[in-house]
Image (cartoon, one colour):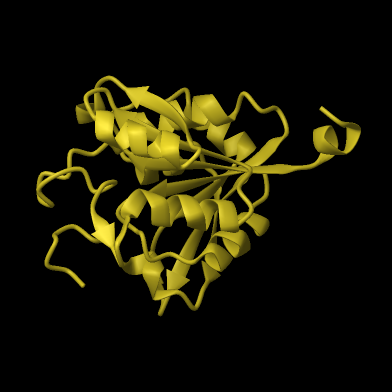
Length: 196
């Protein structure tokens, strides 16, 4: 890598796309909003928000999701047992992105939040220190994606994969910082096709 490339601080992203989407009727990564798959919206927000290495975590049997991720230029990580819970996917994604030693923050982005703006991702990632975790607030309510500093991310890898991300963040005693954003998309968890 060129000298400037090596010394630039990187923001990575882990897109959580391994869920079966049982309530939705199929993988939410493939569900469409405004004619484009959720995964495409989320990947666009990550890249537009300055994340240099977005990784999609997909289920072992989700060939269509993996193929879409490939078309979108995403690296993929396969979670062979997503039934363990979402945190197992978070950990697998973190292992992948932390191989880049200069990563200082990781955006953890559930694929069912396709309305989040790229500007929001950029703001959240820019406010995260190595020992922090950032949660966006819209109208005073916490939402997604969250951002974890690299120091926090490394400590998360030592925990059991069956707990929730919030439980794990409490356990590693990371500094929680709330960042108000004017983006209602951080609260829009789309779980059923009927939702607008």
